[in-house]
Length: 267
Image 1 (spheres, rainbow, N blue to C red):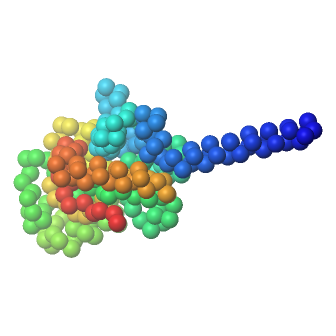
Image 2: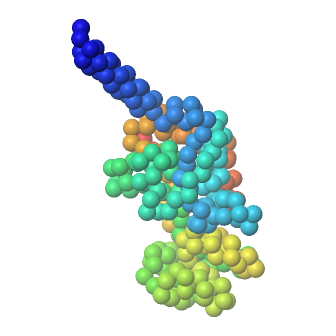
């Protein structure tokens, strides 16, 4: 066998070995990679109270941060938080920069084409908020109350269906303006999303505002890359256990002011 022939065979063997290693790594899957590395990389929000934000101690906190820590603890690995925004959270998952997305991610048909979802882990909702001193225990209690809403917002449309005709809506150009009006005491009540309310209450603790009534639910799910069924199944087990032992309810109560409740399960 001449020298060139031997060299060709050696190169072919090296290429075959490299392909085998790559195939094994690919077949290994995200769950095995996490266990081997001892770390799970999870995309989280850091500017979206009360789900994820930087606290006064400059450390990330919020419901999504707590959920990410729970998943890491139950997997028995360290947590590496990867800050994301709405626009890049799914691309980060698709390109392998993270293994999970826990970032107020709602499930819809378009997203289901490109990533998979676990069971829901927390509520995301629109609600009625008012000072603790204002008794509002039912929609009937909104009769005669002034309610700040953004023009054309879903909150007003849904409230009109369930509340009394004597509700007095004060309509503002956007959520920021309606929030500013409520903070300034121009209305007694505000109807808004939990994320906006969370930011409002964080910045204005003197208001003593609290969750009063649920308007509409649209829960959050954990995003998993397509084909990572072992990881998705494991995270689903973690969610189901946390749901059963009350952990999800406790986290939601702490950060959102209401229990998680009966969240939807994936197939």
